[in-house]
Structures are given as C-alpha cells and as structure tokens.
Length: 147
Image: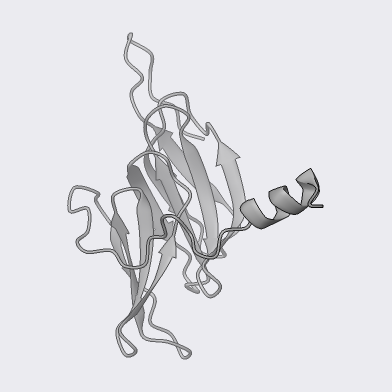
C-alpha cells in the first residue's frame, strides 16, 4: 500500500519548471547609464537592464546570463571599475538593491528597502567597496536622501 509520503514525494518534484526565463529581448532605454561594458581579459560582454532583470550578454558566444530577483522595474545600476561587481536597484513597493558577482551571475548581497520609494540613482567607488544611492522622491514633500 502507498503512503501519503509516497504520494507527496512523487507530486512535489516536477520534471520541468513551470516557467523559466531563458532569453530577454530589448532593454530599458529610460535608465541613464543602463548599459555597461564588462570587457576585460577574461570575457567580451556587456551588461544592461531589461525591465526587472539585469542581462549579461556575451558578445562572442552570443549567450545571456540573467540577473533575476527584482519585483519592480530596475531604476539604477552601476558596475565596479574592475567589472567584478554589478549593483542594481529598483523603485516601487518593497524596493531592493542587489550586489551581483558579474562572473557567476549570483547575488552576493541584497538590501531590502534601501529607501522608502526606491533608488533614483547610484554609483560605486573605484575599489568596489562603497555604494552611494540617491532616493526617489517619495511624495508628500519628503526630501530626497543620499546614503
């Protein structure tokens, strides 16, 4: 006789993912500085924003690595001088800032609600150790904040 555990183990592990993003067409032209060169001695690639995703496009191999995790439109991005770190931030409900390793395409650090309404602009120091952000105007007469 089959037990409930047998049923759950067979039902809880689907063979294929229901929805998986594999390729992104287009980019967000409205973000100032939304495209960056990642060309270095190890790769020939660019980084750009497409809606709520970051895209690392390898121009030689014609492949994409997708940086997924934002629920809102990405509003700002920057890349460290050594091209190792990509930082993305968004605006909207529950905004977030994510620091990505550009080689593995994995999130290294996530900061929830860096500002109340999200991030309008940002930059990263030459050594890649500090990030400065400018908040989006939240409305209600509250001033923008630099942090």
